[in-house]
Length: 273
Ligand code: F6R
Image 1 (cartoon, rainbow, N blue to C red):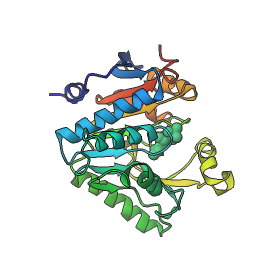
Image 2 (cartoon, helix red, strand yellow):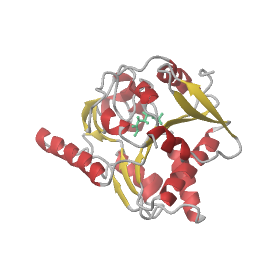
Image 3 (cartoon, protein in one colour):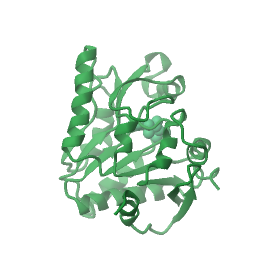
Image 4 (cartoon, rainbow, N blue to C red):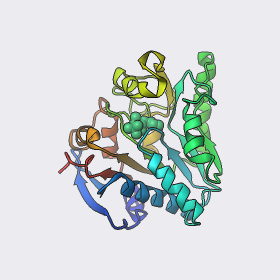
């Protein structure tokens, strides 16, 4: 069975309110695209996919994202768990990224974000978020290698959840990131810092760096669900999937990953067809 077979085989039939479409990418690959009439519909559908993976493999390995896009997914997952329709008590997860420098218990950290939106609200097996602690470079590099090793030891990522940034970044892999990059300290682009500034009380206080899984790390996940919501994402979604893949637009590399599916609301999908 190829990766594509296994990926499509485990895409559960979408619920009402979601249209399933196949998109031919610029790379010539066929990409499943699920379009919901609103944000809540796609969040519910993505949560159902996560619950299903955890049902098929109790200690499934999930790659998780932060930012505004997945919040509705985590809300829906919490509801599924409360109703008994999802059991994540043995799930293992690895988050994409953390700002640097950033103490885990800071209110602005992605550690805190994940606790608040998910891990403090639902029984969860083991979760990992990269460390953003201000440490000497060799310790940061050793932490990054340990993060990669922990993903490998867990058996690799079964399902990776992604948002997409204005620059086309996935994780904090900004344009120009290497296709085979691994977890490392990265520089944030000016656009990404501007988008984050509201969470830090202004651009001055916004970190210039982050620790992010690499493109190589992400592309090794068995399945990848990229979500986008709202008209502000329509242009970058179109460029990422209808223009030729290039490291200048990191999300475009997903065109060549046979286990990728897009989950979009109608506004984010509006430039695709
Ligand atoms: C977050 C992450 C980023 C975001 C992206 C979109 O962990 O890695 O790539 O997914 O910046 O952010 P939102 O969802 O806030 O538009």
